[in-house]
Image 1: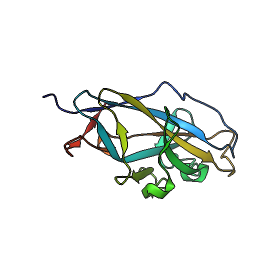
Image 2 (image 1 turned 120 degrees about the vertical axis):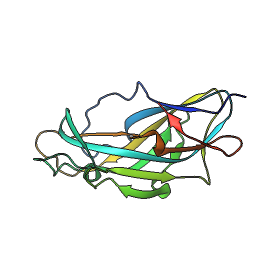
Image 3 (image 1 turned 90 degrees about the vertical axis):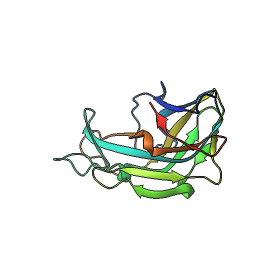
Image 4 (image 1 turned 135 degrees about the vertical axis):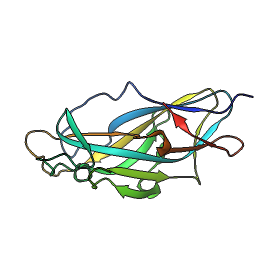
Length: 171
């Protein structure tokens, strides 16, 4: 039999966007999760990494690089949640957050654990996870501040196949 696999990718939408501070339900990034034909996969943990920068070309994990270390992603976003694009259902909200280091320079990560209600990717299917946030009303540093999210490494996703084997994602 073929092994179960999980492939991650960057979704086409949402792309680069500009928002006014205080905007609610902003989709920051879409990440595709593709399960091979071998098995349904149950995703139980996802760690996302947030980036901040004072220019669109100079991002750093959590806190912008000097000289503008005042640009911190944790000050710009609140109510971070993971949402399935296809259904609009919440995969994991702040109640499933087990480790929040968004304000830590060179870390900028946030872990969601939801083994009691895993996100299922059917065998042979691809689903898209959105990182959705509410923007705070905190002042920007200069004219613009730049923020983004991603899954930093494939080990930041835990998934189980139909035999409860851990499946490591790849991209």
